Amino acid sequence: MIPVTKPYLPNREKLNQYIDGIYERQWLTNNGQLVQELTRRLEEYLGVENLLLVSNGTLALQVAYRALGVSDASPGALPEAITTPFTFIATASSLKWDGVQPVFADIDLDTWCLNPANIEAAITPNTQAIVPVHVFGNACNVEAIDTVAQKHNLKVIYDAAHAFGVKYKGESLLKYGDAATLSFHATKLFHTGEGGAIIFKRKEDLERAKIMINFGIADPESIEELGLNAKMNELQAAMGLCVLDEMEDNLKKRVEIWQRYEQALAQMLRFQTKHKALDYNFAYFPVVFDSEEQAVRVAAILKENGVSARRYFYPSLESVECLEAKADQPVSKDIASRILCLPIYDQLARSDQSRIIKIIVAELKA
Image (cartoon, rainbow, N blue to C red; front, side, top):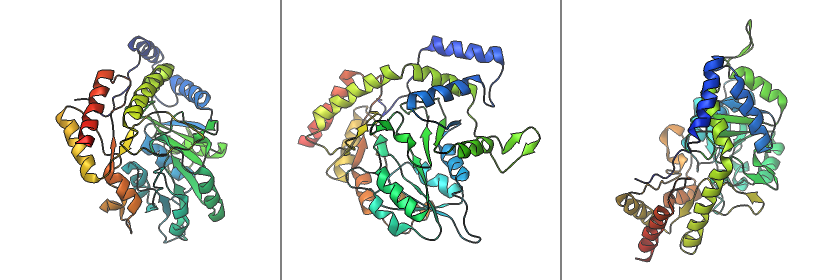
């Protein structure tokens, strides 16, 4: 079976060298040498400051919420955060898990990101934050979201799980918002097996979060606040350092695959509209079909031929019962019903990609 994505596995000899160092130092966690090195290198590579490595991308969101006070509300009131229904479940479930009610606002028909025009109508006295998603690495309308947030004194935490290395107007997209979070899950463009990071706008928020991810312990004799264990370990960092070393080769292969898909399918399927000032990372290749029936049929035919295509993101999250949404979001629901992500990863053979394209084109012409 050709998977929709496959983890990038770096040079084994280099990974072994990092692991040998771990054995020599016998320091496995608690801000070890490799975690410190990966922090420095990622800040340099991404062009950001105040980066905090954590053990996974979901905890990155939860720690960001806590560090920025999103869980706070008036006594007896349930804090709320406005977010998109067109995203992976963790964006919303991490809010709910932390006692914050996700309130969904619909997406833009073309960019598939949270539509700023829909945010203000969803704001209530209990709203603490806006949690937009740079969907598939496409930039949200960051200027418009910032305007709304400033007007209503709201925090902005971007779920930037797909936006590793993406630039907007020549600068890292991760610089926008009070915080931006990354996922370093095994299937991501850059990964540490499992892992994640938070990029904070302010140094003081970073320092608070550092204490939070270590049980709230400020020093061996001082516990300053409620915390949890969200630290990245040395083995994760070793994988990340190796993957980062080979990032350019990985990207080059993905660009080639992405462009072949685009050339073959652009006249037959609908693509996501990306901001003109965006430097993209080619991490995903989503397409939208004319109908849900067509999308489901193509996915089934691909599966019969040994190819996995995923319905990212289906279902639209307002339909997930445990999230307790109050209203349908028609644009998100429509796009979610008709979308498929096609296989894209560095090891995807050209012959396999050609076969995928051939199957899709034949079905669309049938």
